[in-house]
Length: 206
Length: 365
Image 1: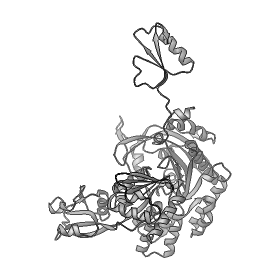
Image 2: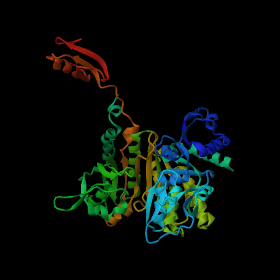
Image 3: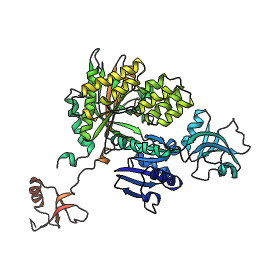
Image 4: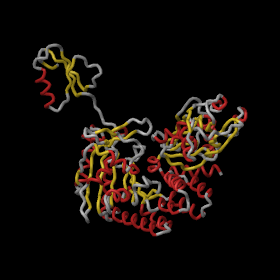
């Protein structure tokens, strides 16, 4: 049995459609109701639906052999996993954004509000800029408006939320999309099967 | 039922693995739990990123609880000019958890060959790694690669140090799409991209992949690496574990530490590698002039979680007694001498016992 961790929610719907078109899905995947674990015994697949940010954790700890997770989550968590395929959807960018008219003061550290402290720190470290990270869990856009931070580091899909809150993208720092991931130890024992799955999904994407 | 079923896996291996190493004349290497801090700070780049536990000795010297065993062995082992010291250890290291920043004690067993390492020694040590994995679980795989292949090739490319590291990370995560994206972004020759992707995609037994692997080599270092793997395959092909060795270019470990053959062992039950090792002349040569070295460590830490012991209860017999216990010990002894485990108490609730007996008026009933 191959255990697959898939994200719930908006990304999950796209993943379910892809698995379905690749012949890897099952009826419950498109309409799971409240059930979180279900099996396709015919194909030897067990699916588990989890919070998108938790998929990589399930795979890293071996509770799932493979999974689908966003690149943002993978980079932030720095998990030791195989990233086998870029599924191409859920495309957005990890961006630095600030209030319209913001001018950076080079004489002091930049205050950065973000859900992604590791990505933000790594980026600013790469340009040798000192920052003060303010970790938030949601509604990041509000931080510069209330003077909590100078900038935010967050994922931007269309930019509509930024626009509505008088913010603008200053810089794109990481392209993000959904990725097929695998636990390294699991892969070693099911490499043929996982590679076949990866190829099938790749074929369905084309 | 044997001790293998009832003892924690970590203890079973601590009992069984030394005999494997001793049968190949590896000698036990024992060391103190701490060493001068300056030794570790001088070789910081060879150590895990997490912190070292330091404290002041009574004479004012700053000491450290051992964060790594190999460093101590390389520094302190007695070597002869032409010989090769064969050592094993069964010891603990102290490291910080990267997620919680708590310190933890980690038990490790491993084997090291230090001095002049020839092809035979290399094959022998890999065989010991295979034997160690077989002791953990018969369902295992030893994934091997060589630092002279993809890592060396990435190092020869006209890229910044940061991009080379990124490229090596993509090879280690089998991210062919990221390799392509980076190479295209840097306008590298498409042939370079295909070669890197070729390494990353290659997998199978050594015998299966060697022809394709040799075809991907473009310079002397890579060809030498492929030859070393071919020699290893020849040496190990006659062993009972030949079909358990696979080539996997994603096996990349500390690039400042390892320089040649590199390997990682996995068992089906565990979601992490349980053994890791390789050729580490870069480290050995820095501490001991001209020394070569190869070794591996078995990570006992965490194995107990995936190999639960079989518990049949707290005792075979529970003896329920009152206030009068005169003569009871003799009755208990008779049972234990007959091979039973016995617990005596006034309340059997919460005790998992195969049989409950009552002790009344000097008799069991």
